[in-house]
Length: 375
Image 1 (spheres, one colour):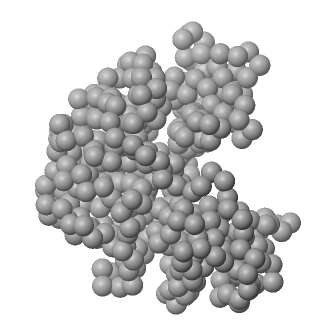
Image 2 (cartoon, rainbow, N blue to C red):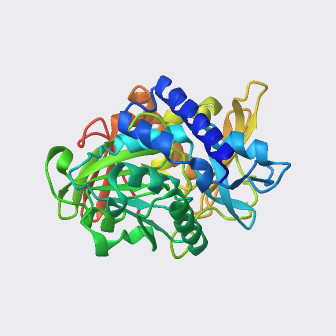
């Protein structure tokens, strides 16, 4: 790294930290110092734009574009497989929100397990704050792990970087005071709860993870029991990868052409992030396609489920569907609950884990609830 590049990058990091502090996304001085010191550009030497074009530090025609992007509050796609994005460097403001929500404490020997190494940038921020020996990060992709380990070393950090299936945590170095996932989950892997430290209050082992499209923070309450609440706002991440990849089909089946029926769900609800959060909990991995008006609002939609259920919402407010179950009826049930309870955001929901049962609830553990399906 040239002296000029290092100085220019440091100046841009300082500007980004000031912006994140002004917006309220980064309030902790210790995390502000970490974001100022850890060089994101080292961990993202290239990324892919929306067309799939590679924007790289190594190519003269894209170098300036690359440098600007890695110092902006942007998520950047850093890895593609068969033309699809499979890893990214998260938006710094979301990273800051998550790291502050993790509630780490300096100087008390806290150990953190990160699920999803990705570029290694988040692991570097953790290592800067807590020390190399206090951070364990795992990923299932050999190429990502190798690259992240090299970039961490280049930046001066040496946390434990391991090739492992994050579904199972990493028992050899447990227990952990905090577990943070940088990938979307549909339910909390039991191994994560088992590997949490015991304690009370903020000393209790805690998990912070994107479940559906919002962040949930839970603490351990027993051998395989945990409880907590979702945080305000959205959090959109790529799914947790493990031995086999489950998800939507790569080719969408034909749309239903049968008898149309009326529906209670207006097309506008499909743009409501609060309603979409509830949908992401009860029907994960849906594949959506929309028709939009001139203002960007949905007027019609098609949706595919991994199990083969398909539904189409038409501009006239009717719906047709086919498949092994009535997908749209599930969405209608959720919408009725959503409207009957004054359109709650994620912060009104919580999660309780009791051995094999994981239940998302609204307002209180005894309120309306939905049992999570284990993936």
